[in-house]
Image (cartoon, rainbow, N blue to C red):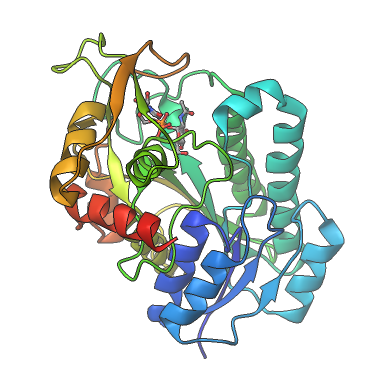
Length: 342
Ligand code: UD1
């Protein structure tokens, strides 16, 4: 029988891509989402792409313990991929209580319910933000984490630690939790079908949705934050990972957990391409691949941005048997196709 994976936050940007890849790899998927930061657009897209009209969908808030418990009673869940969290860095600085309550309570509920239902495999969506402004690049999983500069970043670090501790406390018991934290670099792009993609509410915080919205005329001008960084062209360096490649990393990680292939009951993997790309390079690549001119200007640095971060992906490549495959050009073309389709 197919193994069953709960995707919390499965109607969102990354969750919807992961749902598609899980289903095409033969998993049964249950989606839980409170639709606080998305609508049903992507979930409808998932149904179209997979041709599956029967994916169980629970419109619940994972902060509601009883609702999560009911879901686990109705389904025998073999693994959970937990996305359900707030993710706007700036908002988290202004509203720390909202962020700590939501991001921590929902994850604690997932863990406690998993434990009470006889243990589970739990994959947590962490972030490269845990590394902060790293001294040595690229960063490996052993690179020390630095103090978080936002409540959002802090919740990522705290959830990693909570998972580690719960895994330790439940080891070899009838409530065993095994955990993997995937540290994403900068997820961008959309599914090649252009039926699912990033759907930011209001003004986008992240670079690529701002680029595509500027290109389509929803925004007047892209502001490039800082051109006086100590990099070749003066703009920041990031590791932009295609969202479909990222989704496939989740399938590899879940398969590793369910197949008993983990070397430790709690593991961490960097999920990136291993290639640094500057903001300016990304903007010009977008123009070139899509044959258009983007209205942009250089403005002051954005507070809290690090100069450069990219991943050493050796561990994920070797242990998960996974590698990022799509080129940044393909990814930028997919982001543009999605924006036009909206
Ligand atoms: C941020 C979060 C990260 C999160 C990621 C995806 C931090 C410090 N960063 O990463 O945790 O996982 O979003 O949601 O917590 N830029 C512009 N103009 C814009 C927007 C961005 O020039 O309008 C630049 C930024 O200065 C940065 C790069 O583009 O150099 C990428 O920015 P963004 O997409 O917001 O991602 P990060 O800040 O790297």
